[in-house]
Amino acid sequence: MQDREAQWASRWLWIVEQLDDLYGACRSQDPVAQPLARQVYAELLLLLSRGSAAPWSDLDSRITALEQPGLGSEAQAVRSRISLAWARILDRVNRRRDALAHLDSAIQLAEAAQEKKVALVAKMEKADLLRRCGSFAEAQELLSRVVKKARQWGMRREEADALNGLGNIFLEVGKPAEAEIRFQTALELAWLLDDPRLAGHLANNLGVSACIRGEVEEGYRLLNRALVSRDRVGDAKGYAETYHNLGMAARQMGRGAAASDYFRHAAINAALAQDGTTAANVDLGEAELYVDLGELELARFHAARARESYTGTGDLLGVAEAGRVLGTIALQEGDLETAKKSCDSSIRLFQEHGSPLGEAETTEITARIARARGDLGVARKTLMRAATLFGMVGNEKKARQLRNEAAALA
Image 1 (cartoon, helix red, strand yellow):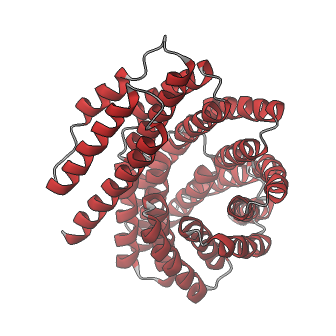
Image 2 (cartoon, helix red, strand yellow):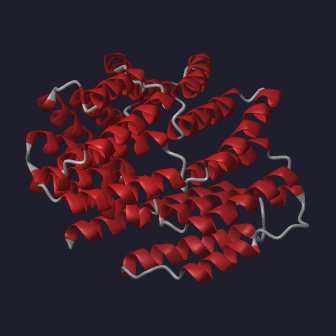
């Protein structure tokens, strides 16, 4: 109960901070927007003190009223920032459809006011939200336009951020080589900008991409480089992400004790940063480590908690990843029916959202299930399918291993 109350308080404090910043930004610029922003801010403070739920529809309608066109450029500029801040709040409380609508309003108002930076930031945040919803093609198209505009306007930071976003999409759809081109270009811009936070994030992403390609030692080296950049800024969220990825790499290298230590550091920093997504990722990483150690009850606890978190935020790819791990646990316990059902459900989600890496990993498990059932023909065919998928994401080492395993079943 106390944990839930602490999480609730942290969420609302973040929301108040967003509106507090917003109020300060538009305090003396817009006679309509300023008092409304102040009023919403005061109401949220009151709600926080009472511990009651927010009347989202009422607050949302007032923000929407600020987004009407036909205003002067100064009013449009201020109101674009209000729309952007409100979209962030809605995203934070998992109202993603409403967040997308307000991001569209922020883009429209910022473009009308020729607020280039706000327009590009809103587009990047919309693309990130679309990516998290599995709309990869739309997100990729939007970010490609942002990169083009940022270059045209000489906005290097926005160009680097958009390139990073594009790289993340290419990773999600199983194209690490394409991702690394974007990450490397963005990293060079981060160095020019002397931005250690962004440099750390990009080194982290390059490390993840190397691990996806099966070059785990290289990935581990890059992830440690990312930590050096994180040290310069003391970025708790960045630490959480990189420690989690180091834990995954250490596990792949058979260094279980190191992986456990990295996951512990990741969990601490995710809590400090109030980063629920990384916290869920850490849970899933720990679940896989416990599977390796044969601690299946602990593995199930962490995987189920991760799935609950992903479900709550609408992260369907996260739900699919958790299903893959739960399927692995069921396989280890000999419950082949449950294992097959869980993996089949995950494969459908991976296919629907275009994630060949997740599909590859889960298809390999279904081959193990077929083999445990004694159906060697299906196992061989499924291993070949998994090998093809691993080849698609650039992990030829894994693909070759699975092809050899399939040949041994002939």
